[in-house]
Length: 223
Image 1 (tube, rainbow, N blue to C red):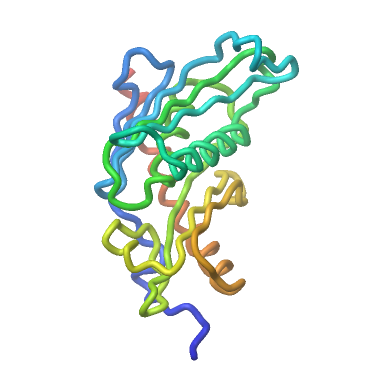
Image 2 (image 1 turned 90 degrees about the vertical axis):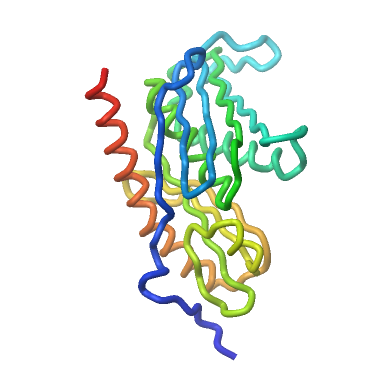
């Protein structure tokens, strides 16, 4: 039995097409509609504003997130996504600059065609950039899977491919050294599979950071 992941060179770091609309919403301090393939997410950032007394922290800002599915009330999986998004944003933000304040990030799913968590994190990052809240670094999230039948590693799979997944990974990298910020997995996997998928997604993350730079530069020119 072959344990080594089977990949082709073309499959290793290819991402679905990305698109983005910045600050289309009037109420948030920063917003982004991020599209990756047919997966679409809108994120809005509010703050810093004065935190509610029961949530106030005197040494740093409180980071609140809300993830809303496309229909129906949030389920357990949605709450798990919300937690990953919040913990990622807490790692990104310079919360010590805003003691006693609150920063709220609202994320709305519009369409899920695979890689929803990664798309949500990328939308949140772009919304934070546009909001001008101080950040330690930007982040890029990349999803991948291992096919149940072939053992192939597929980066940024769509919803059809994910149906055949034995395991899925979502990695979040910071934009300076590409260090890992957070990770979310489903299924059972070997150490080799973990390391292979980590490095493929790390390489693919550069495409997202390049996209950020280009889209923000275009937005700045229009101002």
